[in-house]
Each structure stands twice: as C-alpha cells, then as structure tokens.
Image (cartoon, rainbow, N blue to C red; front, side, top):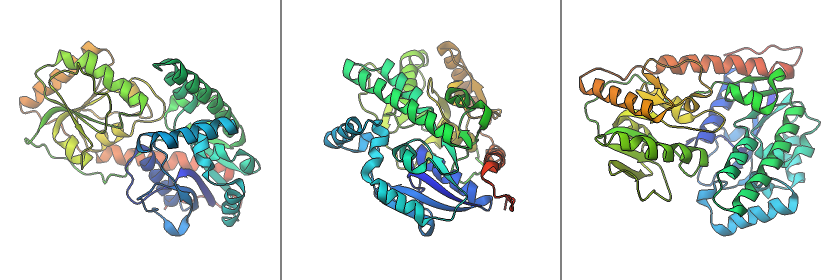
Length: 393
C-alpha cells in the first residue's frame, strides 16, 4: 500500500511538542505495517525531517502563536478574515493551491491520502475532494475553540473564538464526510465528531525509549508538572490545581516546568515555576509524584502517556486519561479537589515510608503500540488494494 501523509508539520528527527510526537508515532506505525509513505507538509524552523527522502517540504513555517510576534498574528487574522477560513487553517495558505497540487501529483501513484488533523487538509479541501482518504482528528478542534470562546476574557476574543469554532466545525464535517475512515485519539471524540459508524480510536505511544525505572532517593520535589501552559486547556488545569489543591498541601514542594505567562500573583508559596527545562525526563524523574491535572479538552494527553511509559506514580483526573483504556497500578484517579489532595498525601506518605511506587513502564508502552498497529491496520482497510494484504513487519 502507498499512502500520502498530509500534515501541517512534517515528522521531525527530534520531536518535542505533543503534535510532533504524535505525527512521528503515527508515521512510524504506518511504516511498521509495511506501508510506503510519502509526506507533504511544512517544516518547523530549526528542525530536520525524520524521513527526508520521503518528504516534500512545502516551506519552513512557525505555527505556534507563542513563538511569533503580534505582526505575524495580525497577518494570520487578516488572511483568515479575507479568505473565510479559520485562523489555524489560514496559516497553511503560505503555499498556493497550484504548488500544493503539484506536490500531491509528484507522489502518484498512491492508494490514498492520510489527512493528519484539520489544518493543512482544511486549507486545500478542493484539491482533495476526489481523493480516497482517511482522516485523523487529533482533537475536536471546533469544541476546543468553542470552550475558548466561553472562557474568553473580553468580547473581541470571544467573537473571534466563536468564529473559529463555527468555521472549524464546517471543515471537520467535510473532512469526515470525504474520508473512508476517521481516526480519533480519544474514544469520546468519535461522538463529538458524529462519526461513530465509520471511525475508531487510535491508541498512541510516545517516541521515548521505554525503560525500566529504578527508585531513586535523590528527589528535588514532592510533586512536578510539565506542559505547554500557553494552551488554554492545559492552563485551565494548572489554574485549578493552584487554586483548589496546592493550598491543601502546603508542606509539599511543588515544581511547574514549561514556559508560562501571567503567573498568578497569589500562587501558593510552595510552588516553584521553573520555566523551560533542558531535559523533561530528568525533571519528572526528580519528582516523587506526577499530578495529571487536565480538566477539559479533546484528544489524548501526551504527558499522561509519557508518565505511564516511564512508570512514574501519579494522581490523575478523568480528563487526563482520555484515550487510555488500561491504567497502570500506580495511577490513582480523582476529580474532586479534596480527593485529589488526599490521594497525593497518601502517595507521598507511602513513598516516605519506603514503599517503591515507580514501576516498569515497558508493559504499558508495548501494549499501547500493539493496539496502535492493530487499529491503524483496521482503519486503513477501505483504502487497501484488493490484490494486496497489509503485512505487519
């Protein structure tokens, strides 16, 4: 089978963001099934394609809002308004329809197109309408935009997010209609997209090498959290933790890693904000317990997968566990602030009493990867040439 993997950002050699990790994992999964994959998309500045010989780079493009200036954001907004597209889709219009079509034609012959998230496919719906395709929805983007509108702090932001939600809903609906199969990263997103009849949820792993963890006594912090706090859904969980839980555990030393703006002036004194850290694995290994604090959002939480693959003990909200159907034994689930704080206290006490809470995360990783390949193969059957069978390698 030959597929074109169409994605806003091409898989890179050193993935860092959750989106980059998911891209790399999915393409690696396709290749593990023996599928020939050609990749089309933009390249993040400073990165190198994971598979340069199979990749057509449309251009270099920085798409992260927090990494560009106000002028670039205004240009994106103007382009979105003038073209009637969502802002996240308008970012992809750096390439003309003619050049996009030329890149697609360069990949022929192929059996179908793997539409990876809404952004790049949404920018070139017309050029893709006649192609056999499957669609991977990383999130229910329209739902996220709608929630951002509800949580907006001013009228203009609310109006822009409502516009984004309405337009993204149209793009998602069209991509789902065109696709022979729809993948989601959380089972609940299938209902959110209205595609239960032709969809499946796709378990993910991370690009970390799974390794057996050994208990260490050289902890710097009792609790540690790391994430992209500029993402509204992530920030909502952090604000909830700081306001509702941290005050209940004043004796615990808590660290928050990752770039963050507008640190609350009333943040508890036992919370230290570290900013970007050099090595995420070293950071989380320096913490006794990893709270997983998501309160909203769609898709899967990559930080949850990383925590489980590293075998680290955690207290997690239900929202943090979307896209995961089998929990490790050292994960405690709690949604209410009081229960969450009590669970943290219990785990810390057990750790201080000498109980080993860290486990081997390789079993979780291997089971997730097995499911990933199985569900990928299932969802690709509508594109499968009648004369061939997919053979996992």
